[in-house]
Image (cartoon, rainbow, N blue to C red; front, side, top):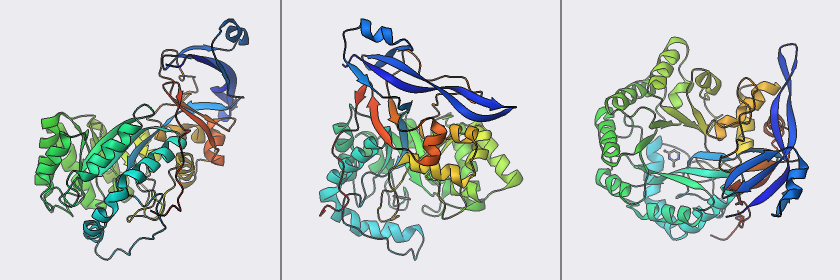
Length: 415
Ligand SMILES: O=c1cc[nH]c(=O)[nH]1
């Protein structure tokens, strides 16, 4: 493993105040010694470097920030790197897409691996060193998409960590996918997925009971797509909370999208947030702006963990998506009117699993000696600037190794 000095990295060290208001972020240029994938020394003294006869890399004053965790994507079914194709209009809600997939997915299978690899390379290039991907497991795909997903991610296993959610996209009960999901859990999936137990399976309790049963059997976490809006969504959250409690799975359940949170207000929102918080159920969101966005800052203030994900990088569900998480954070900040230094500074946590250089009080808490050398170097003076100006990620490191220098997909390839 690499042993080297990374000199001249800019680290955030605190906040600058005017009266009681944060008006800036202070930084310091430091030198980092990396050994066996870990940061073993953080120094401000250039003399330290000269004493060592190990390679030296120069970050040239670039800002060092925690790398990103992509917490919701589908690498197994994408148009990314293929020819342009817009989406079909939706005429029957989620069932439009379910029916479409039965034809589309077998046609995409021959190049699914190539596209998945290109997507991973793009995500690495954009600063991600962890990916949670949902992978279709239903009668149309069987375990074929899972094979593709495992193969693609394993190829990059030295560059990132990953989680695979076995996703019964066509309905766990509706498409009779229970035994396939059980098989997927023995063949590389790490989490049990699900989708709208009310609208799709039309039996919330049976669908959730089965999901938790499979999770318990494999000692696995759960990550469930919940698009159902308003009070139907809220009722599903309540049942999910009940099942989480009963199964003693506190802290092991994620709701993806959680669309209903964007519809609820006042007391009903507070009650749901309190229930979710009690069971430490976290939320993954794309920060949708085509419908009421879930109230991310309110959820955060209530103590719920919210993470961002891209979901699609152009596919049959959405023609949008760039895989650029700095851009995603900037959209989040703009949507919630984060225009001041403090709130822009606090935005990075939604993409880094909560890791930030400064804590809420402005004390430096990252990086720490002994931690894994997982970071990005950014062309920015501080993270508030990076988020607002959508700064470029210069380079990406996992366990001290540079991981963003693989080939980048060409969107217009012939596949
Ligand atoms: O259910 C969903 C929603 C978005 N994208 C998917 O692939 N599935």
